[in-house]
Length: 456
Image (cartoon, rainbow, N blue to C red):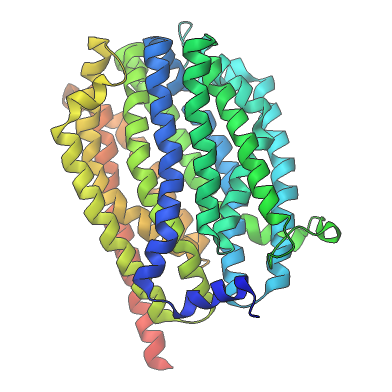
């Protein structure tokens, strides 16, 4: 009887591309969108159950969470990409070693990053933009998450590996389990037990602990081709370097996102105070929900592109990429129209504070212009990640975040005295410029590939 896992790997190179893209991307989209949807609903619970300033305190923690996620993607996404390539080359023993190396690396890094940050928490939060009025909210929310960082780190890393090993549905199931439990516990802790903003972080930790048990159980089953084996629990330094090499692009991208969040929060706070920071907290949650859908599409495509690239099936790689780009652009253009038409009712879900809502409405309408171009940029950047070209991915990420956005966020507010509006405008403008460059790099890669094929 043919091994079930072997059959899954065979499908990567034989099944219709459109079907495969949907099969792997839909679970990944639901996976990431479910987490983002929870974060959005979490903000609604906090805004209505704790207070307006609590939203601002929550927003101050975003850069820190981006930094923690950055270290997670360094290991989790790097391991997933390398696993997909190894499976495409039928290197099953190496794929098993990757699983165990990811667990060891993840545990060590999560302990170091979580506790070092916790020991310097107030200093970091003030640097990220906290005020005397919002510091307590930020400290209460992020402190619990930092203490439980190993749980979050290992859950997210192993959940990514589920997709890379050909189990997108199981990855989705673990996420839905976690998010569903979270959505039940958060209002219970905030409104019934009156734990305040701590209730939101407590529910997150408990839910992710349950999710971790779920994924560990899967990788403990010997019926799976890639599973835990006691003899393999050792850190392979060669694989560690390869994992972190491939995980460097999303790692740097998240660090760049953290730096942008810090700059945004500080500039918004300078021009509009705590309410402007709260408005950013609302807009960023909405922005993250829709951007995660596109990232989910790209992540779902990753094992398909990685496997077929490793197997030398260039035509299938191109078809997967074209399918993904079409879906991403069409969806995000629709989201752009939705945010422009229904801005007011969307913002009012979070707060009844008129001053905060006015700022958030302006911010959402401006930021919505970035959705269509961000769809193309994110999909193409992830393509280079999927085929094992981290340097290209790093350069594109850095240019967008550091080369364009950071200068604009300081220049636009002062030009024509735009002030707060200038801060918001810097977001879509940076994305428009970066998208043009990203498309140009991708077209250059395609021309070089065509020349190589003709020479062969």
